[in-house]
Image 1 (cartoon, rainbow, N blue to C red):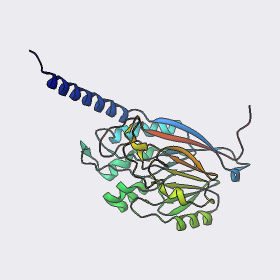
Image 2: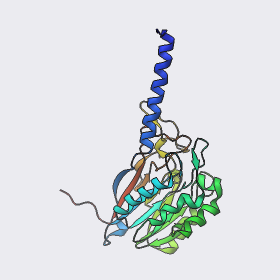
Image 3: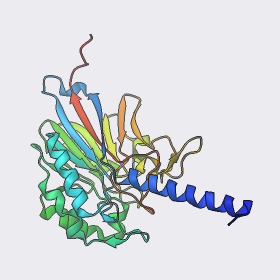
Image 4: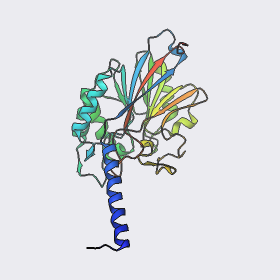
Amino acid sequence: MRFRKPTLLLLGLVLLGVAFAGWGYASAVSDPVVRRAEVRLPALRGSAPLKLLLISDIHVAGPDMPPERLARIVGRINALRPDAVLIAGDFVGDRKAATRHYGTEQSVAPLAALRARLGVFAVLGNHDHWRDEAEVGEALKRIGVRVLDNDAARAGPLAIGGLDDAFTGKDDVRATVRKMKAVGGVPVLLSHSPDPFATLSADVPLMLAGHTHCGQIHLPLIGPLATESAYGERYACGLMRENDRTLVVSAGLGTSVLPLRIGAAPDMWQITLTGSAAPRR
């Protein structure tokens, strides 16, 4: 049997699309990359180094992020022995393309096993608000996660501020910074969206965020298909420094819209805070 050239071309395109989707799904369900950064905060001088573990955008939903996968990731986090775990929102996943949706309690239950000397802190993301922010917040509190809703908490020498979601207009930067000052300590701000970093006061030297998924699908020559940020690619991914302030944006663990990742592997960040510059070699 002979195929005409248009038929062969169409068949080739279909096979290429299937291979591309398979590659994207394999990347989406791969073990998160542990990225590491050291951030010097002079106000910590005299204190022992602290290890923060940042995760974001869990998006519990089938097929790529069932609760069982999240439980395995929690085990990996605990093996890193962080002093504090910070979660930058979007716990639930309600995308139309999901093979299964999970209730809020079931979605966050694996996080109850997180272990960190100074505690586990979280903010909500846009997907949490779109489902039910009160329901998600209460479910997290019941398993021992401290939810910071434009609020702050003391964690050892740190004042951890939690900014509510800027993407849905729930953030109040001034109130959060004011509460960070009230609890005392070295300021570290946790936010779902990285966008507030652009106008953040110099009083807050470190901000941690997620939301962008590092584009989730990041194509060669084209770049990320979407970042959901008002600043485009400026704060899309990774570690950035501006005017003596540092921003770390995680690619997240789960997916949105489609269970695919291309060029933007799932990740978590281990951030070591020190009060002194690294010794010269």
